[in-house]
Length: 460
Image (cartoon, rainbow, N blue to C red; front, side, top):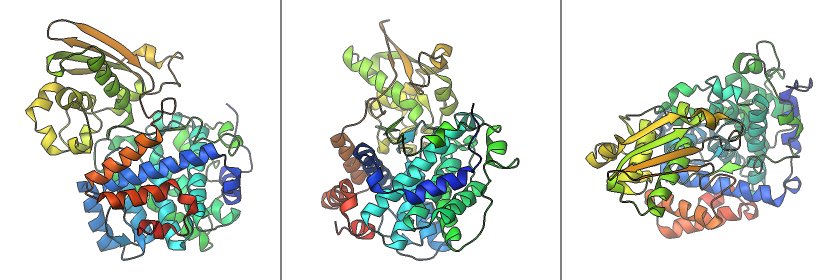
């Protein structure tokens, strides 16, 4: 594995981020970025109705003061730091947000709230906002490739650690910081970046997303004031690479920055269902097997899901006791398909968990790691694939394999399907359809907006 360039990761990222222009970005990458903004806005609007998001808003109201930055899905506003915290939490509350396998992280759920807060504070136009979102996203994903999967597999939640650094880069871009100040913002965020995978299935997970977004904004604000930071924070013997990644770094992650757009390669996975991405393939395959073989869901006696290691270590709650745990439970995900034929935001509830039909369905689901799915034939192409076998009460057995469920980069949702997801999320939040359509239309053409704040006020 090659060593990272001696100039320093923070400085190299700072120079690239500050110099980025929309004219440098191919239209295909711009389109993916718009899709990420639409998807993340949608899940934040829906997530704003969850208990964890509502409690977080009360915390923000009491501790962060007033301001002009929008709290998505609500009529409330807050300071830039408060809005980043609240919106990051809401965006991740349903675990319905996108995923990048460039380091295994939910980049948009951190970068968008940070860039949105910085953009509203600076009152910038839509084109600058899109530029900043792309800068922050590409920085986070470049770091994900630099640190490789080692970082996540050691137990660090890359969404919180690398997402915060991408958020700082994006917020710095939105704030118009130069290369030096952007590098210092990145270094400050790297110093404070945190998050452990141990929090799966608790409120801490979406809260950590909000904290990462807030850290990104605050790091950019501090850098703008002129505060210093160690620009060798990644390479220092007591720095991020040594402490969080066994000293490992792949230089290609940074060398290809701006040449290979990580929004396109490896691309972004957009979810169809509000549970961990690790469950998506098995869920879709179960539904497909039932439909194609004309099976009665109530007559399914057992479901066996064989999965690779990444799925096994992500879905840690076989018998979930709370909605947060249910989002990381294969029995819950498949159980919803068996009991209801679908899984939407409405199923992520205590009422669903108390439903005897769902509980009975969950008892029929088994998950096991299959060593062959960890091999080169499947990895890294299909990181969260699944092999599913259904057995009916009559003894009939059907099985199949799915590597890339709908929403994965190899099998993307259409733009219309994404727009429908946006509408469904707005419906879940109780929005009038006109309000939903106005915002959706504006986000599809975000770079033409004179003011990001104007879009959020419904001015188009």
